Length: 344
Image: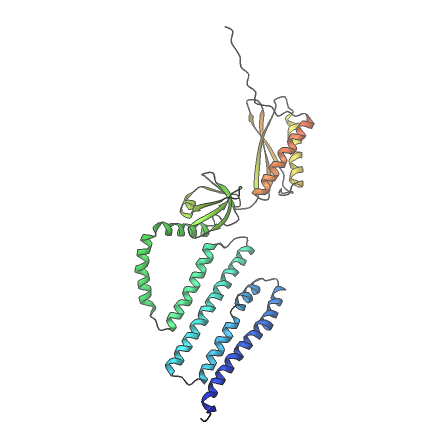
């Protein structure tokens, strides 16, 4: 049997190009991409790190697809089969590129949100929404390449979407309520909030249906977005993180109020300067409120960096004020009620 070299040569070329594309892909990823990644770590902008890391996961696949695309020309196959292979390569390339772009977009938006102090809502819900939009665009491009008409699909989605929206009315209400919370910047992850119903904690995440709030006991409170959007909420981080702690106190009627004010302000200034969480360059204030049943009542205002810092400032202020009052002979009276008993 005569060995026909010309007949099998195209297959050798096909295999050679395929193997060469794999080798080039490995070299590019191990050498070129690694060096670019090391250089990007030295730059001040973190965006190049995000782009290179996202692209790095698909580089080898893209080289293989490119080699396969070029090598098809050397195969003696029908035009229809060749066209099918090329469509398959294009579909895989678009899918991998879409996934890489969605990762890059989400991470860049997270970076922008951190840089601007939360000006952009970077949450699970918003990130997933961005991914869905980008992947949908990629799928539409694939449908267009495959020759599938998009118009009937969109019509079917419209009719089906109406039926689904009626069946999932409560779910969609939570979804749109979550979007309203994010867009209105009513709150964002990391904010300390309290609800009118009494729950208090830190917003952990805003998902499609629920918002998770971590309370002081490390329990996760899960609230439907539709209820949260209509609830009265106190946000301790909005519009600024600084919080004013108001401490009420009272002294006996025989106290020298000028002396009380001087001593109290001194203690407050000392606490703000020494306790972590206090705003050192702020000035505390004292306001006498009223003549109480057994004391002259007043209120002290101290500024803290955030809610947690405010609790520490308040804690330390009460301790030091009590100690200083004892040293100065200032009396904080117990509630006293005088009862007159008439003669029988």
